[in-house]
Length: 214
Image (cartoon, rainbow, N blue to C red; front, side):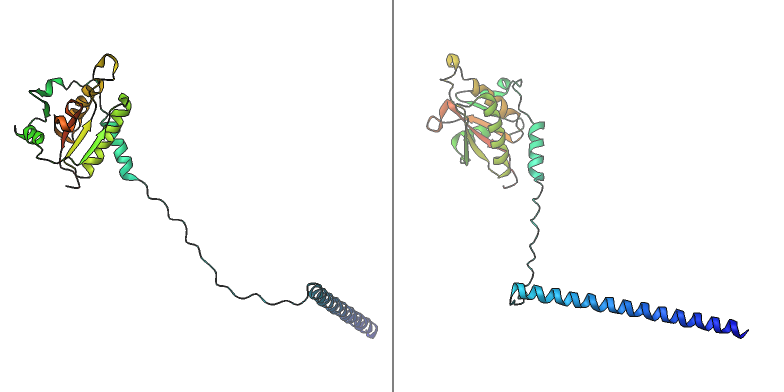
C-alpha cells in the first residue's frame, strides 16, 4: 500500500516539474519576442531619424454631387409635340378668309378679331423667321416657337415664311404649309397677312390664346 502511494507521489512531482518547465519555457519565449520587437523598433527609429507627430487635421466631408432633377416638363412637352405633330395632309384653304388680305380665325371668335389684329391692337412680342428653311426644319422650328411663346404668355407673334420667290417655279411652297400648320395648332386663335412694312405677303401676324404667363 505504501509502495503505491510513493509511486503516485513521484508521478505528481514529475508532472509538476514538467508544467513548471513548460511555463518557464513559454515565459522565456515571450520575453525573447518582446526583446526582438523592441530591437526592431529601435532599429527602425535609428534608420529614419528624428520624427514629429502629424498635426491633427479635421476631416473634410465632401457633399455628394446633387442629382440632376428629371426634366419632367421637357418630357411632357416632347410627348405633346409627338401627339400634336403638324400634318401636311391638312387642308386649311377652306378655313382662310380671302378678302383684300388673307386671314384666318378660329370658329367661335368675334368677327372683329382679325380686323383688330391687322390694325395692331396686339403688339408683336416675338418673331420667328422660317424663310429659307426646309419643310421639316420649318415645321419643327414653328412648333417649338409657338409652344414656347404660348408658355411665356405672349399674345401676338410674327411668323416670317417668305414669299417663295426663290422656290422652284417661284411657288410659295412654305407659305401654304405654314397656313395649314397654324390652323392645326390649338394655341393659335387667328392670323392675318402682315402689313407691307411688316413683311407683307411673306409674313403673318398670329394671335395666340392666353397662356400660363398671361
